[in-house]
Image (cartoon, rainbow, N blue to C red):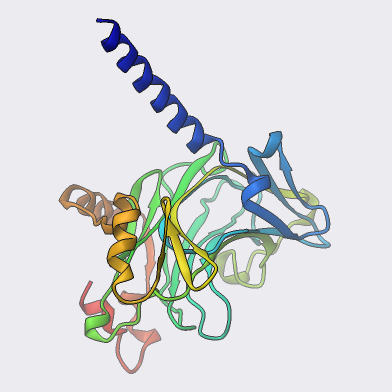
Length: 298
């Protein structure tokens, strides 16, 4: 009986430690505020980060680590009230003219009108794969979790664990897929009133400034790029080339091989039917030479 009590207690302590580790990701340790001249701030002993935009400047931050595959979670609370003209961007990106990028962008609106959630995927410097959504809640009232699941087969965008988009690896069909370039996580709050709200027709009302968005609950269950062209997944450090992919999968978590099961596929289709407002794959006028190849395959 005593040994059973000890086992139960250890189980509780381990569960508590794991939960604490997830919730205690510290912005002071994981991120640098890179621009904004004091408009970005880390508060509450590293548990909260805020970005501010005024007429002079916006602000932004970036992760200290680069990731090559992972599940990235961040809780955001967006600019409340009249947010027209503002954009809160939250994305993974590498550098250079042939960069890869995985985007969440939140396009503000006038008071009482909904935000637009803009998603995009860049491969080797080529984007133009936009899908846009309305949200089924007010993203300014409370924090919500926005996740990117990126593994060798899929890029899955999720909102509060609800999948909204799945960009699949179709390299075998000639479609490029991000898999070789480690990416940092970036976020910024900036003025984009030349295009962000109703095609740029509605401008930022600076009488409501400063505008502010908030971040908490960061978690990266990911493979981290380390010296020598290697990546660290879990406790291991393995190369990124050739046979190392299998070693990376073994060292990483379940996310490395995760796909949407039938239930999650159905939930994603429900979101897309009810809340998707733009899909590049259904915009033939934009592509006079024909829709991108993946549009007929995914």
